[in-house]
Image (cartoon, rainbow, N blue to C red; front, side, top):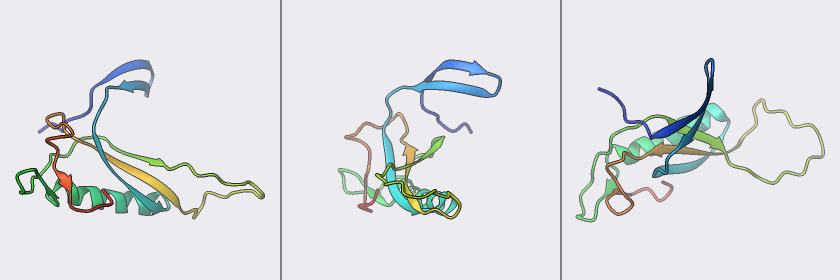
Length: 118
């Protein structure tokens, strides 16, 4: 069974490297803190809980949402005054973790999360 992926145009490909331009998409996201491994685990679990049914529809029921790929993760920017070298090892920061929602949904039909952090 294939996992749905968002539509994109390939802009450039050289060997194993690709630059892609993605079409507009709806995401569910959470902001979490920690190092990369801890934050990715926390974020994934929160979003998985949402798509596995911790949500509600306009009709008042919950709905399981299909998983798509890829899961996206990016550091949230923050203003830091540099006064000394910054070492990344063990560095705790804020991250945004995203699940792309299946194309069958729009903002009206997408179930709303019960967890306010989603």
